[in-house]
Image 1 (cartoon, one colour):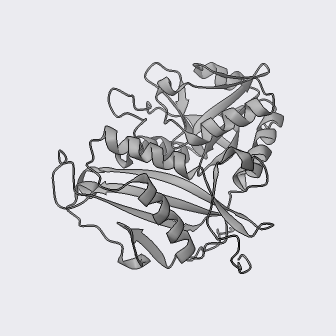
Image 2 (image 1 turned 45 degrees about the vertical axis):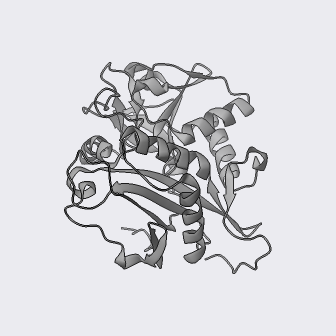
Image 3 (image 1 turned 45 degrees about the horizontal axis):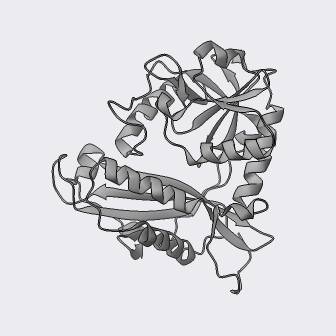
Length: 319
């Protein structure tokens, strides 16, 4: 059995604006973050452009804007700005000398030893490491419709990117993997398609690309927003509307999308092939556009990329 290559741990992690050795990043076991899952976070990707010898963070500003929204909605009394977080992210990438496609985790959490009703103190950390693209973006994955219902805005709002919300995702994904699938799709409490456990969903049916609206219990996904704009640029007919379960089975193409998942084709759901059971033409078209955009080969005018390294500095060869 082939094992995934071991990715070395980075040298540094940033905690409250200070670069510290990776192994020394700790939090007290009695913190509200650990006791109650009281943290909000963002997962971002950075992409290495070998031709330009530059690392780009994709849509950093939008991710930080969403993080600040999550802090507000959970009543965290944070005393840092999105400007500070952006600088901390870029400084960490430079300190770790990351020159490969990687993943960034930025979390803000309730520190100290308080109970679940407190608003502070709020700390944050930024972590980053190399993370190559999964080969399943080429072959596609098999999913099942989960028996677990997606959380709703009037109970555990998906609009808040909170660590505790991902217990819902864990239940769905664990069930799917136990049953022999790669991942899950989740329905909301009305029985309509919501999203996957950590990624939004797009369905191609009858010449139209469909995706559930943000009122169907989904995260306000930045990748989703990116793909909607790219689809419009490519002349793909796209519509945000509710999607029934049987429409998924009857679809011509289906894929998940998220910062970690990127654009991940789904070729089978509940043992039913989607379309001809292969990665679809529109999916491939959007994959190519997305991969070119995030790496800086196209769409630089959109202002979605934050360069990490000084263009005048000499960059060593990427690993």
